[in-house]
Image (cartoon, rainbow, N blue to C red; front, side, top):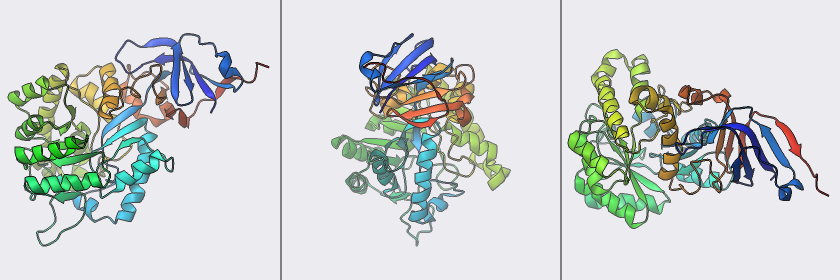
Length: 427
């Protein structure tokens, strides 16, 4: 593989430092080996030849991480659609979604649950180079209590769908153990409700502290982690007290739970999945009618979520993008909308929104020493953007502006021509 020299870029390195103009980045194999002004091609590389890519001031930045991924949710209208779709079609759609995710500039992702072993199989296929996709932490089926928002089939019908129903500490332990046996990197626990389901609202807490703690004990004993759906204040409190690693949503926290999260901010990641709320309010009425959307309380819920995310952000809690994509009104491919929501709705600076998707992304992937920033020695997960996302964060949603997407030193997308090449100048 020829070395690649990106010339004259506008560098946003992902650390949060001020950007730099006219920067060159040298990639050898799958690693970044030099970052500087006016890099001269090392003699040791000249025999093999070096591709030179002239950026002309385009932005060069790290690949991003999508921290709330559902590859097996695809164009769904109801939760039942996920449950009842044949697993074969689910596998095909999930494989396509993995490629969409990668070609949207997200070179890493954290699954927030999947049908069966689909994510596990996709992760393994990606790692073996069989299919294109991001670096993936694979999850299994959601672990949920009876009567939870994913328990939507009649009591006389049981479907092996997106969730495994487990009640009580022993059942939770058994289920978590079975998911890790199948190869999951982490498990998902639904601790609160979700207001699209009338019998289990977002404000409801569906698991006890002891049940949450049982899942955490089983995961941590194996060096694994727990991801939760937790909207209600009590559900988030249980997550913090039990040592949950990744807390999804955290909308309705009260002041006490806010302080708990701040006090333990080095232990937890918060992934609010704001685009789920925003998109449902924007498009949901087209599918369900305005009266049904009003009944969810999402309008008030979004206002509460934004206030809480703003104060968590200001207090230094790590908030990451990931928006529950996969429903008809919240489709795959729009992942970078979360960064725009962080800036325009939460109040982050554009730089901090990028850090949330890059540096924090590397931390949630447990690869901080390898990805997430443009630094020497890091793996070459790189984006070249035709424009400046610090001026307009929404540019990251425009795939035509993603001129280069590189994962592990290899092009996924390259719309830029090699403007010069050093070929065998040394005898």
